[in-house]
Image 1 (tube, rainbow, N blue to C red):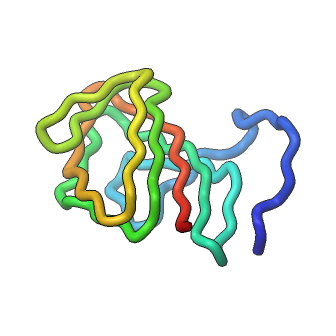
Image 2 (image 1 turned 120 degrees about the vertical axis):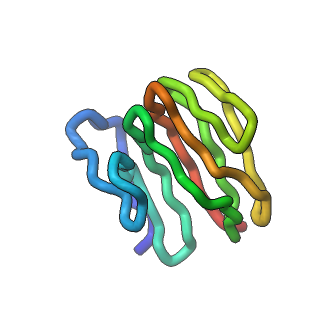
Amino acid sequence: MPKPELEFFPVDDLPWVPVPGAPPGHYQKILTEDRDKMFVTRMLKVDPGGRSIETFIHDFWEEVYILEGSQWDGDQFFKKGMYACRPPGMKHGPYRTDEGCMTLEIRYTR
């Protein structure tokens, strides 16, 4: 299904839902997606103390902007207002957040 055309709407009205396959305390709001083209825009929220144990390598582009909180990605510390653009194949993680973290993520293939 192609991405829908959306005008401004209250994102706060969307529910936070558990991220499938993620540890407890990981929630997302899907803002828009096109499953056929592997394109998704979502907000991701991780509760304080949340973490992953694996290193991630995606076959898609991933852009991440930290809206609230902070996180460790491997041995690097990132906080509110920071941004990453990761090409396919870029290793990242494992990650953890002591205070909790909320990000805006955009994932897509070319």
